[in-house]
Each structure stands twice: as C-alpha cells, then as structure tokens.
Length: 241
Image (cartoon, rainbow, N blue to C red):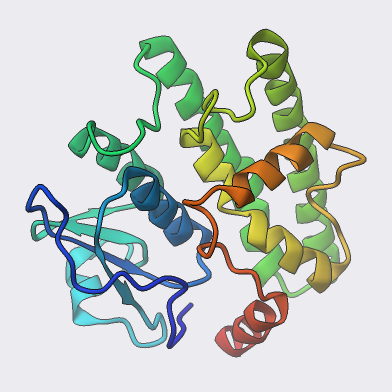
C-alpha cells in the first residue's frame, strides 16, 4: 500500500548520537505504524520514506530482497526488516533513548515476546484475510477468530491488572505488547465499516477498550495511526484493483 502523503514527516534528520536512520514505510500499515510509535517513544529522529508498493523502489528491493515489503529500518546504511524485529532492535541499539519496550527480566521478556507473536498470529492473520478475501463469509470467519483472540488477550490483561494494577501491558508505560496490539486499532474501525463487525467491543472486552483509549491518547501515538476510515477504505479499493 502507498500514499503520496505520510502520516508524519520527520525530514532528513540525524539523531543526537550521530546515527542516521531511515524508515521505509506505507502510511496506513500497522507494521510501519508500530515502528513509528517506538521511534517516537524513544525520541529518535529519522527520515521517513513513503513507498509505493505497486512500484517498489530500488532502495526497498535492495534493503529487503527476501520479502520485498515494508517496514524496513536502515540504520547507518544497514537494513533491518520485519516490524517486531525492528522494534526489538531499536530497544537493543538505543537502550538509553526514551523508554525500554521490553522488560529487563528474562522471564518477563519471554512473556512479552510470546504475546506479541500471539497478537500477530491470531489478530494480524485474520486482519489480512478480512482485507483480501473475496468471499464475505471468509471475512466474517476471520473476524470471529480475531474476536476470540481479543477475548484471550483481555483475560491475560485482566490477570496482569489484578496482579499489578497496570494501565498497559508494559506496566506504567507503553511496552512491546502494547505497541504490537495497538498498531491495529485504526484498522479495527476500518473493519467495522467494511463488514459491520466490531473487533474491539467495550461490552465484550472492557479492559482492552479502556486500554485502547489510553494507548491512542499517548503523545507518541497521536497522529500515527490512520484515523480517516473512508480514506483508508478508498485506498484499499484502489490497491486491490
């Protein structure tokens, strides 16, 4: 997917440590958005380059020759692909910048990684099916799988809240799982308009509904997630045809 206007433009900048970062992305991709949020959380300057996936740039094809897709982070000329990998890389490469997304305790890190993988497998995979499946029945079945996954995540968040009273999966602040799940929030509204199914429903998952409001209100998130549902749907239709 591509757009002539990215959600947030940072220009050609270098962060304070002298590291040059470029992010190849698409404005409405949840996987690109999560990297943007992490860069904002860490206060790292970077150059954003909007890609046209119908006419992929040579830079993208060179930087991600295996999958040929966004996001790709280029750090001092070295490309890193896949959004979860990029987020963890930023935590490792810039441990003193902004917040740490992953906990320091090895067990807690493993738990966070487990749930991040779960989100992309059980929420992200149905999201893709809803977008690209031709039959409505297939879209509805995918939505049902995503809803079931959200109920499982709600239970996990309830257990964490009961133990810690934490507003986020990351504790007092946004963490790895928050970023991975939160990157889909804009698309949940798109899905509701597309097929009439609400993936995130306060009646069904009240804790996640309240969490989503806190997440979207964060400074690092505002202006990143796509908020114009009709624009996203129009672009999706153009992309599909």
